[in-house]
Length: 360
Image (cartoon, rainbow, N blue to C red; front, side, top):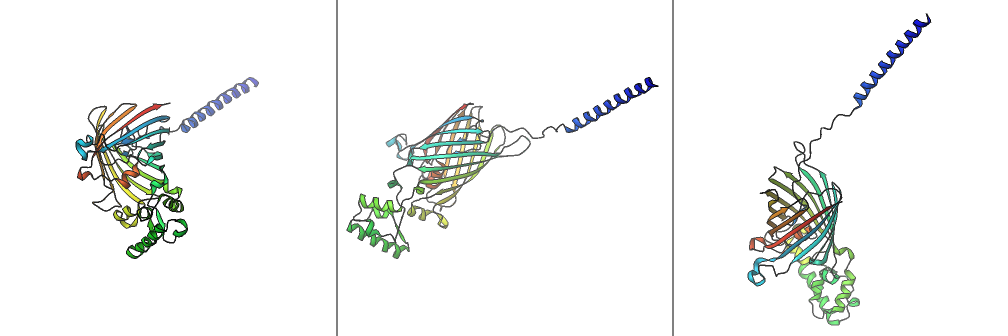
């Protein structure tokens, strides 16, 4: 009786173990996560984050340092006088960017024209996938600081209610300012004169102009801002394109110029649309085409649209672009807000971009 009972207990114990083990296997199988159904990423639409005068959605890999040299020569309109702009007034920008993660890049650059120092950020919001999401969407923004002497930033408003007689010492200059204040009010209903107007008046002198400027200048006048959303698609291995819309703001602008060419009184702002396209003709070589149009300005007046045509030669760590374009601002907000070159009248210039990558 005792042996029979032990034998039954052994069988019962083994049965319980098998049942529990089987139950555990079922639970374990149910707890295994399903394999991801996310589609593979499409190859980057562009080899570089720079495209003539525009930016692209592309980013180098995470923990990559990027060095950038951008150079624009003068316009070709003077022909042999300056060898089609090669000896003309040029602009150059040198920059460094660092990709913190695969989706985030920060950068800094310095530009010869206006001594602009720009700080930038680029973030890829979503990426194109093979057989999945059809486009890559990214944001690019920067803040630029004009580091020139503040006297170069003139044309800020001098309010009519300023006590000019206590600021200005020269009596002839005092009378000239008083007359200009009356003329601006009578002829244009303006309650100010501009610094540039004051600088051209009888009796104007360095000391009094400096005092006037000090009474009106603010450090915030040095700053300008640029924000852009970019949508790009790699249609096939040979062709990629991108559309973008951007907003520009300057804390200080040339009042007279902007009031003559900006619509709706938005003289400190502009909105721009841009399109770029790349046609690959070999594994390392592409034809580049770009066009951008400011929207808050009148037709047939500056700032003029920017267009570009060029060639890009790229490797895994380098990109070299040589092109013809019309704008020489190099910093995006300068191109959009102040492009003085009318491409339809032949104001075209030669430029190039060079990038070099180091991955850590």
